Image 1 (tube, one colour):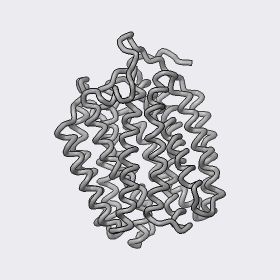
Image 2 (cartoon, one colour):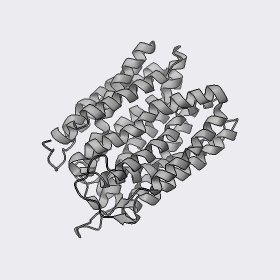
Image 3 (cartoon, one colour):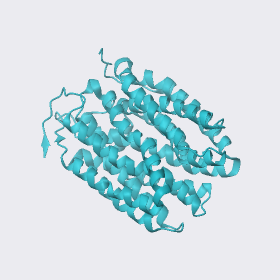
Image 4 (cartoon, helix red, strand yellow):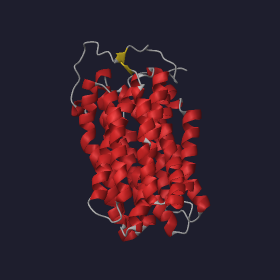
Amino acid sequence: MSDSIPRDRPLFNRDFNLVTLFIFIFFFNYHAFILLPLRIEELGGSESIIGFIMGAASMATILTTPSVGILIDKWGRKPFLIAGGILISLATIPFAFLDKIDFLFPLLRVFHGAALSLSFVAAGTLIADVSSPGKRSRAIGIFGMFSVMNFALAPYIGKLIVDAYGFDDFFIFCSLLGIPAFLAAIWIREPHVSRNGESKGGSFFDALRRRGVMAAAFALVVAGTGFVPAITFVPIFAGRIGIGAFELFFITYTLVILAVRIFFGWLPDKYGKKKVSIPALFLFSASIIGLGFVTDSLTLVIAGIFFGAGHGLFYPAIYALVIDLTPDEDRGKAVSICSVAFTLGGMLGVFAYGVAAELEGFRAMFAIAGAVCTAGFLVFALYGKESRKSPTKA
């Protein structure tokens, strides 16, 4: 049942907290699969095979997200949130019984990608629904923190489980996380979104063609081409150059994102989302290039600092920018545009750079990825539009 929610709500309201708890649990499962390349390599898979299997999830997300964005605007957010949580748990169990690389690996990753589309678009739209417009960048940033935390927690805890009990028990543990996620989801009150009789809402592509949205989506595509290959290949790259504790990168990245969003998350709402995101985007590019120069644990940590600082600020800023540029009745489509754009970039990047790493090595791969990001972000800096909604004074 949908409830009428006051326009000016506290940042940490009941429904914000429940949606955030759900997405925290969901992303523990999803980001635990950062360890999957190690399992694939253990079973004899090459870099290009790893890229194909990991990219299969992104492909599924891209194909399903536009429809999900349209459907949640029509039928509501909560059913899709719950459906995604159930699907990722069911698609995780079979990994415990696979001892060779076959078609089931990419197929199950396709289900993971579909689950991400269902739950993330629904959760991201709910966060926008239950947050006041003047607090939206902060709300999205804090909401995102609880998914980002699992870039550190999930591989770290997962690695402990794998080392102690093996991959089979690790996958079973991840699948069981669906139970507390479901309990959190059923208590969420979905707010009523007023349509004011102005518009019945358009298609996904109508929303994409709105002034400024295309340029912001392009920036997210470019960011995805650097982000997903980095998190996919850092564990293997670190091992190849003799750094056993690859999780240092993810822990550092996570801690920096938390700090950035807690202490500086208000900047886009006050000074403008495009204005704040541009330097963060170029800092992110520098971090990708920097990964190619990593030689030891210290330089890996430094790369993680820049990676977290850049991503921690630009992603919620651009995400909120797209929502601000889109009417309320198309909010689900706005969130789906962000998800499709970032995921499309990730899929293209992990496919292409998996082959590049196999042919030229990881250092060359990171240099190319960082250069592509730099060029793409320059286009956004030149042609991107600021939100028509004025930044807040507080």
